[in-house]
Amino acid sequence: MKKLFFLLLFISYAGMAQEFYEIRTYQMKFRGNVNILENYLSKALIPALNKYGVSKVGVFKDYGKPEPAIVVVAIPFASLSAYAGYKDALEKDAEYQQAASAYFQQVGFDKPMFEKISIYLAKSFAGHPALTLPNKQASRIYEWRTYEAYNEDALKRKIAMFNEAELAVFDKVGLHNVFFGEVLAGENTPCLTYMVSFENMAERDANWAKFSADPDWKRISGDAKYANSHSRTVRKFLEPTSYSQW
Image (cartoon, rainbow, N blue to C red; front, side, top):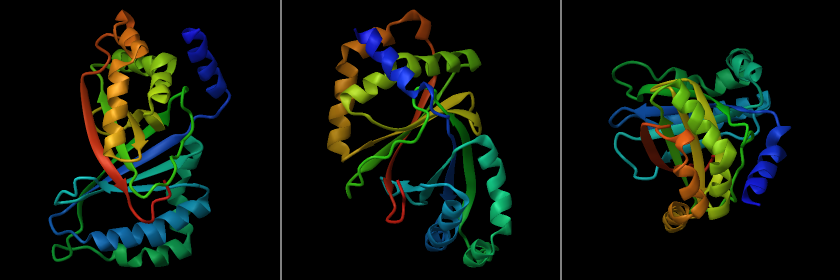
């Protein structure tokens, strides 16, 4: 029955088109001007992307509020061609160019903003092909994880583990799935990246404990075909900004 449940869950997603995600991390300079960046994101980039056809853009800050800060922007695209065309669309969008002018003028050593923008481009998993947004509770948090793999075959097996069984366990124990993607380009590949959400840290801790104790998880984690399928986990806790659409 359990295998049948997992199979039916996978089939229910099979006809859905897989999305693509651009995930940016702005690594701010010490005392960098976060306000100008956030004004650009909220008043220029997000409205322009919405006009282009991106329905929801997520913007987050590190839950621990480090200094220098990070700002994470997650942009879902319906297709690879939509991703490939969005920068040209922004170039031709006069309203965007005007709204972004203060951001574009923030150059020079006397106007610190960010050190770099790190970018992942990811293709959604067949088992979770489309973004799933949580209820917008004020206290909600997001856990963003990246699993690095030993090599391409190890990554393929880890993605299969998610698609064939692990995603269903996430659903069962309350790890509220937001997106899952195979990283096509970016740092520290081969890797996959995903995000789950919780009402608060207490729910997060309780539901991960349920996951660790779950008999289906114990069974699949002991399956030899999934052994040595990832080498390192990178984890960040994030909270949405007031203008985030996630």
